[in-house]
Amino acid sequence: MKYIIGNWKMNGSNQLLQEMKNTLITDNSELSVIICPPSVYLSESVRLGFTTGAQDCSAYDNGAYTGELSAKMLSEMGVKYVIVGHSERRKNHNETNSLVNAKAKKVIKNGMTPIICIGETANNYEAEKTKEVLEKQLKESSKGIKGILAYEPIWAIGTGRTPTMEEVSNIITFLKEKIKENDLKISAVLYGGSVNGIDAEAILEIENLDGVLVGGASLKPTEFQEIIDSVK
Ligand code: PGA
Image (cartoon, rainbow, N blue to C red):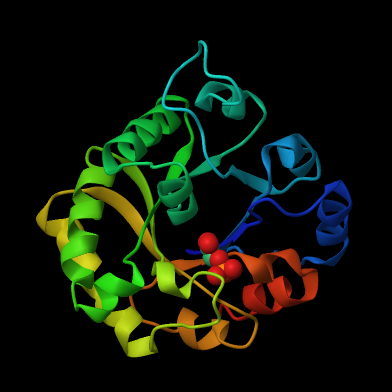
């Protein structure tokens, strides 16, 4: 099973969902295509029949948390997956590994699957600290969590700069080893960061890689379809 996940971030509209509905052909049983639009479009995405993911959720069940949505609310809407710990949340909202872990626990408690994001900064990468940083994020964010992991080098997100296929392959192998060694319940490891219609085929051929998390290119129906079609 390969996952192709579209993270719309703060983009899109009901109209774009409809365009996706008219364009996308996702009838490959070896493939799970998941659309993660902003919260206000989640119910329309579910209504149109997309397997739908949210981009975040609260670490609390309910209460005085203005602007937040609980995992239960998302699940009631028909959402099946929730991205937690995206680097933009970690950076812009100071989310820590323990908060990410708490959110992932709520996602599971409400019958959905968390997509936990981890990734090194450009400084970590240049200082050759990638594996060290990832191991800590992996262990702390996904402790006790049954879910999916997305490896997204922060310096590759939205930049058009990507690691080499060899580097991705090496990191995926490393993460899978650590998952096993630490008895973590992560069932799939994805890559994310500037995946586009052209590179997708080579990326998806990487042994051990279970799919991709796509930002910008998931907003363009034709290009997103190209990525979907790259799964052999
Ligand atoms: P990008 O974003 O594909 O636009 O680099 C990926 C992500 O942030 O998940």
